[in-house]
Amino acid sequence: MLTIATVSPAEPVAEGLLRRYTTEVASRWYGRPATESEVDQALRDEPSDDLTGATGVLLVALDDGEPVGCAGARFLGDVAELTRVFTRGEARGHGVGRQLVRAVERACTERSIGVIRLDTRGELAEACALYEQLGYRRVEPFNDEPYSDRWYRKELAEWTG
Image (cartoon, rainbow, N blue to C red; front, top):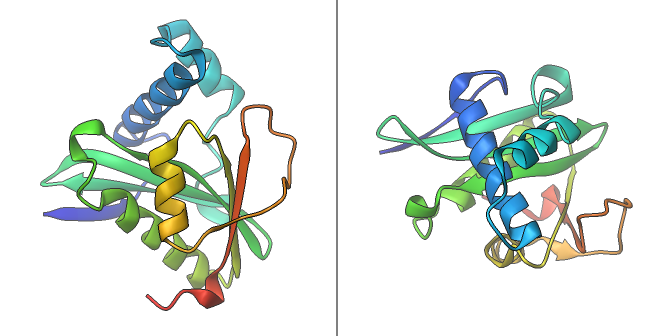
């Protein structure tokens, strides 16, 4: 049974998922398996410690207690940035990512945030397909993130469940 829980980025379950997420993203970026030192550097360069409390949220998906995915949002006034959306390989294709993104959307709605945006890379084809299926629309760049080549936005008022 899949459950979704809010966790601190410092909790071991979150640290493990965030490391796996970063390893996969870095490996795709490099076109080869990322080294442990590259992953450590990426985690330092892009920390997740703000995904808690007033500044954000981090959710983990647990399948019968086993961590299988995560997703977070940074709260930026009336806009949130979706981030760290990840499903472990063996859990893909079962709707985990969809459930996590929907849960982040609900968390944002509960905080009266009306817009979610995100940046990503086309190489993360599964993620791009998910965002588009969930109603995210491609937009012009809203930041100068060097690792991104796609930007998306969704008005939460469009979402009905």
